Every structure is written in structure tokens, then in C-alpha cells.
Length: 174
Image 1 (cartoon, rainbow, N blue to C red):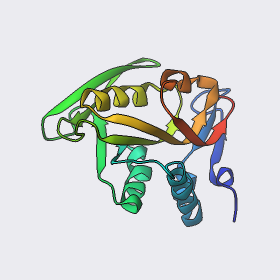
Image 2: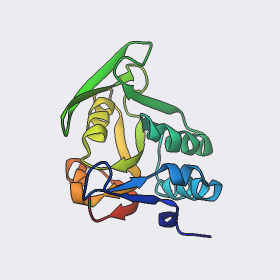
Image 3: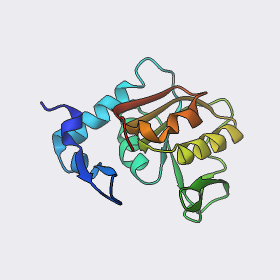
């Protein structure tokens, strides 16, 4: 079987010259790659006591949901503003050019619940940092943050220095 890195398509000079875009769709489009990605991300949770899996829109849903299913845990959505139907809490964060806002249902995390956060990629860390702040606002305790890929050159891990962070694949650049 191939290594997980071999399933990731690298596209040079996208979205701008000098950037290598790491395309997760090539992992998703290959049954072996998808299976390996979920297994390796889930293995990062081995031995941890986790009550809830949280996934961020949208690729955090793709990887977080099967992990929650496999572990027989509830799955909580973190969505873009205006997408959730019940009472929500929200958090805004900075993007390279502007701001974004994400939301969670106010009743999605109970005080004291141990939470694992799942997403496909850590770049600058802004989305996950905002999600963690919401989880903590609701009384949850983040016990692990798991990414499929990490772009270490963007130093997103620094924003999450107080948390147990794992990435299955780490790329040195941006």
C-alpha cells in the first residue's frame, strides 16, 4: 500500500506563483487513500478519553464524521455564519484578506465534555483557534486537535500551542 503522502496531489503555482497547493480531493477520490487518511487521523486519538468529535466546515466534516462513527461518538458541526438553524454562538477571526465568522449550536457541547477537533489542514490556525474558543465558551475541554495536513511554514501551530495538536502529514513550506 502507498504512503498517505503519495495520495496528495501537489499543484505548483496555485493560487499564486511560488505556492504549492496540497489537494485533498486526490485523497478522497481514491478508496485506499481515503481509508488510510481516516485510519491515520483516528489513530491520533488512540488511548484518549473523548466524548465528542467536532469538525469544521467543510472538510472537517468529511474526516470527522467517519471518525465519530467509528468511535461511536456524537459529531458536532462548526459552520460558516448563518448556516445553522438553532440558537448559536459565533466567533470571528482574521483571514489573509478580511474576516470570517463561524458558529456552533449553543447546545452542542455540554460543560466538561472532552472534545477532539478534526480538520483537513492547518495553515494559519485561525479557524481552529476560533472553534476552540467556542468549545471552551460552552464549557468543553479540547483534548486533541487532529489535522490530515499541516503547512508548517505558515506557523498555525503557534496559535494552538496550548493544545495537543497532531498532523498526519507535515509540509515544511506554505
